[in-house]
Image 1 (cartoon, rainbow, N blue to C red):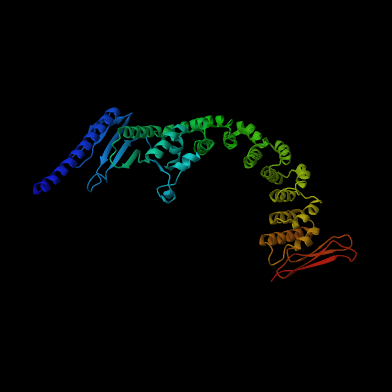
Image 2: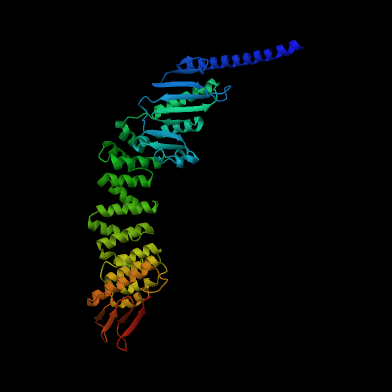
Length: 462
């Protein structure tokens, strides 16, 4: 029995060693065959080192190794694959799996490519020009598979993946190495290739966001490059209205037809149509712009109509006045406010009667716009209704200020008096006395009546 107790531990130890030797032999055989399949040189494990393989694969230096993690056993080992970009993968490009902690990473600003599924999966940092140019649709597919399956990174010009444990599945290991080499090849780019690669993305990429991002970069930084010209020509026929708009803005005269089409198409997003009209307003001859503005004022697109009203005010298109007047009712407050502003650029006896009712509009922006226009072209008849809005402890401060400014301006035009002073103006039955809102109170005598004038006193809050 004593002999059995002595022999048993030795036997168990021998069995363990035999099993470990068999595992190591099997692993070595797997790695040797994988290395042969990849065309790499295999190095068996040493006393303190794990097995490895290295060499050239499709033009890239590749090293695969098991890194000993220290401690007893192999639980702390990990399998690392490094594909050296060899200067072909820009040092300035970094890619990793997108995680919750990405927002806390301070290693540079994250770059959005414009392809939402890709942007949600992959965290991209680096030089924007290289990133946009290199990440074509094909490259994004390759990178996405690598990030999703291998959870690796691209950094400092290398494609690197480190996975826990000693990888003993030769097929998985070979597939990982080949994926990583494809990533290195997909991201390979030279600085001189950037404009052409971006133009290719504008022409071919299935994602409108990516096409827009590439064209926008070309327009901003390679405006006079032939590649930008090529990209714009292609983008004028793009399915995306935003891409067409950017091309029309960038390419100049040849983009005018595209801009006109964007304005006329009711299916185009409202803000895109408005932006297209804004550009046309800068490029069209005045006579053509006036005609186009009159047409646009009939549009149901509020954003487009507001742009046209702003142009009407800037250019002082008198012919647009009837249509502007028709926009004072039945439209959303932003349109009514813009129409009120447009009425304030041309002196017309009818303006005061049109604008005064807007002082009681439910929207403060409309009221403020009416005050501003009354200040420019309103008659003395507007003073009394304006006084109602120039006071009140709980009234909108901007509205009170606009009303006071309007009163001052009307008084100044009527009799040359400054705010807070007396001004005598003509009335049918008698003179009219007007005092602008001052720091204590205000008095306004407006259009004469049977009692030879009316007096309005407004107490300013102390």
